[in-house]
Length: 229
Image (cartoon, rainbow, N blue to C red; front, side):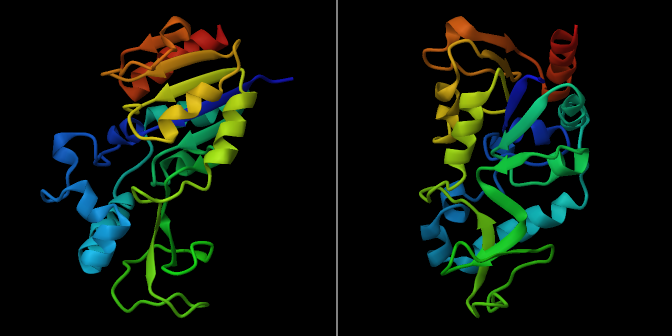
């Protein structure tokens, strides 16, 4: 039976593909505070601004491509039973070929009703004020989990981590909860690797985490060699 490997991926994985991150100072969109464009309050205050913020990010997806880290993660499915749990809202893991992906924070290529969060649809175009959900007739919004909103996929993600033999944390600052708390569900004998050029400290896990202080692609090359040797 193949070992279960869970990838916990963050913005650092997609940064190599040219996708801007919130974490880095230059990742802010035209100087806007994240709380203005990634909270329900921000949307109520200035919906046009928030919609355009995500329209820009959605357009960018069609200009970027998966990088080597995405590709190695996908290729490892030949040897491991892999679940990718990602904080990223892009589709680069999918495009690289990963087949089992949990999007904790939503997906840019989906939209949903502002009233019914279960009413999601595939969406590749801009969303504008007055654009209505085809079934509910209510305003569309990005299918994104904003700060302050519940994370419906966290239970499924926690179950995946709980069953994992190997956990790889890659490209995340380990500062955004509840995602940052997922490693706490790891089995006592699960091996944990942490790939990040500026790795944070994982509370209570220092003794069992192997840190690879590298970028995503270099780190995944190194890890692949470790896992397949």
